[in-house]
Image (cartoon, rainbow, N blue to C red; front, side):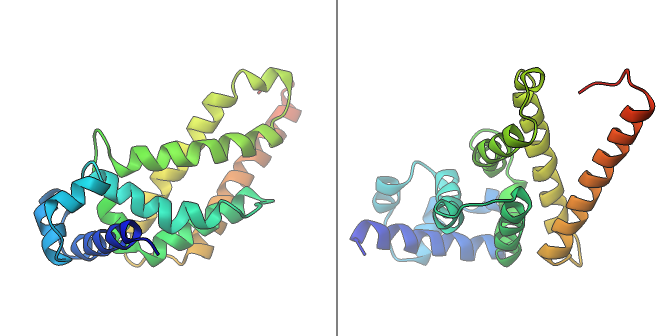
Length: 190
């Protein structure tokens, strides 16, 4: 492992440890560096700011590990996300609290959106849906983000499989209701 990766991982471990104990907005670069005996120069050589570090943690711990997997079902992908967040719950509860520019929520949305877009593209493939696909994918990505954030904060927090099953049941139940209503009233279109 290169020295650069070792340094980044040390900074990441410090950040994760700190975020289990204190709010993100109370953590500064000095705290992170002190915990792993590195200097600020080392931190800024690798990361723009603490927001960049949080996003790097998510990318390297989750996204890099799933990039080579072929998900045949979007629910399996969503369940894997939930399992990862559940295993790192204190860290991500804290990360989701950050709002504004460079927030983890914005970064997570950027990462999640293409997965949702591609999944919906396969499901809703038709000329009339193509122009609305961007809207649909933003809607579902945002809905999943809000649901995940709320779920992580619940006490007790449902196991990931149970939470994903509830999401799947609610979405499929709504879809069935819409299809039923469409059959009853032919004027409704998607």
